Length: 170
Image 1: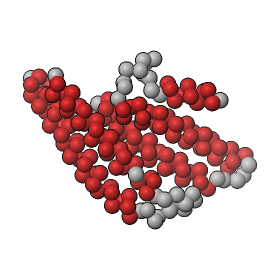
Image 2: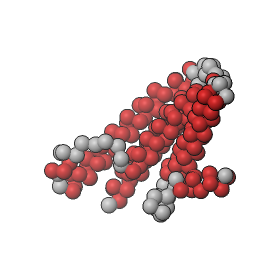
Image 3: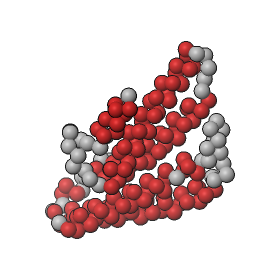
Image 4: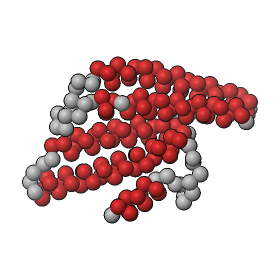
């Protein structure tokens, strides 16, 4: 079973059998997201077994699954930004020449950096203020859940800076 889990995590780092994305964000986040998804599936399956077969619910199962899902969402946002898969409106940029498209692309990534920086700054008090707050079932400090916000914002800033630098090199 350990071999299958290792194989699952390794396969999360490849696309179409190739591992051409050697970016730090992808190399770190993809295995984490894959592991969290695997744990979510296992915990949810265990919860179903306990609830419907053994007639004994696990009070912590839903809570930890939600916490893992929050981390998956925020870490996945950085990967999605890296791959350029976020929703965008290109009705105007398709009408522009290559030089203007490049300028719009750099400006857009600069706006993303500003937005992520504002979210990062706004999330710091949230992380600090919730240090004493604990989750009901697991009694985990909610700071560890809210850390997903600044962590992913830093990654998204990193990705946007790399995109700008790559575009300027062209």
